[in-house]
Length: 51
Image 1 (cartoon, rainbow, N blue to C red):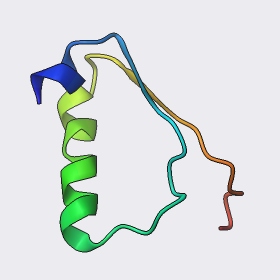
Image 2 (image 1 turned 45 degrees about the horizontal axis):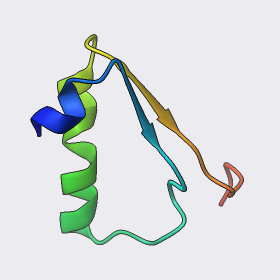
Image 3 (image 1 turned 30 degrees about the vertical axis):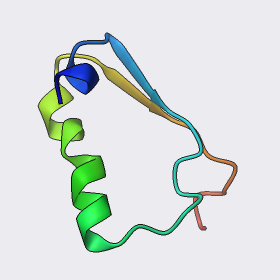
C-alpha cells in the first residue's frame, strides 16, 4: 500500500477498460480515500463517461 501512498501523483492508465468484480473493485479503490489530501490521482480511459 505504501507504494501507492508515497507519490505526489498516482496515474492509473486505461481505467474502466476491464470489468471488475467486487473484490477487485474494493482492492482498487482502497488507495483512493487513503490518498485523500496526500496526493493527486489521475485516471485515464478510452471510454466515454456514459460507458
